[in-house]
Image (tube, rainbow, N blue to C red):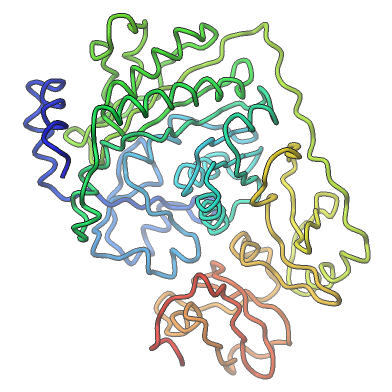
Length: 476
């Protein structure tokens, strides 16, 4: 649980609301699931879902509440990328970013990927999404989650905010700053942890002020990436006014070319609290911010502010195309042979990049990133080896049913799925014949899980070792 000083501060701020707020710390946190609309409609998933689902509300049409005992993270539907497990109030952030198909969007602190996967879905996987994280390990986790989501129009970067500003300039229609914060809004989740050690909460007012200083600096850098007329969205998972209304007020005092706009409003969304900001930081419009409270909303604490770049005199940045050298025709030979035997649809070679033996399909709007560390260059198709092409797991998860020549499909309750996800080979049954010795997607209810290689009368397992379930009973 948080220290007494935290509750004393919240009682001072909330007054008559405090008792209801404090009572939420004795209640279990809500568990959320957001359906991947790039793969399936929310209503269709609800019909086939093995879990009892309840819609979170109009603010997130693809979001649902569910019982934590359902253990949805271990179901094959999760491995197929049909949903993302996300805290319900966090689903509000991407909705208020409100990205439109075809726009250029930057998620500056994107790991582990909850907001970026949501943005990609709202953008209908079109335009360009740059998902960044400054931490290398977290950026790798971000890439894995984006791959499971099946995104094709995203670049995954590992860079500091200043590096992003130097590389791109003001080119993005929407920039999201999901700012590192003191995390007060998640204290209830931490307090409910089964592990007593992980349930300890470190909090101090000094930590709050340190976060606020960092957030203001990040906002100043993020502003350099928003094109005129574009929007800058700031979000935290804390209650602290120093990090919320205070950070916005400090930013706006030095950036008159940005102004707060009224975001989309939904049931349970409270207004910002201008009265909680020091008089020397008071700024018109702070009530336009949105606050989500656990005693008013089925979720944890969140704060969201939407600002528009109103400077029409400043020119938009130059959207320099991604500079790359097309692979040689001989290098693409093994890809073409694989694609002819395995895939349908259009796979434009003029957007293919061969990097260190890995073949990528770049987004149509790929932007130059020569000064940044890229974790993923769009969609990873696979590895090019002499006389051989090995398809990537990311390619399997990005495939739509009409893009596959042949697949081996199993219903959701098939025992073969546990065997496959555990890394075991699968037998080829009579009803699956004739299967030629080739690469085949393994699918659950028609949705790809990964690859298998038909050879010698069985399906050799190529599910990634790092993702395999520990399931000694999975062998058939």
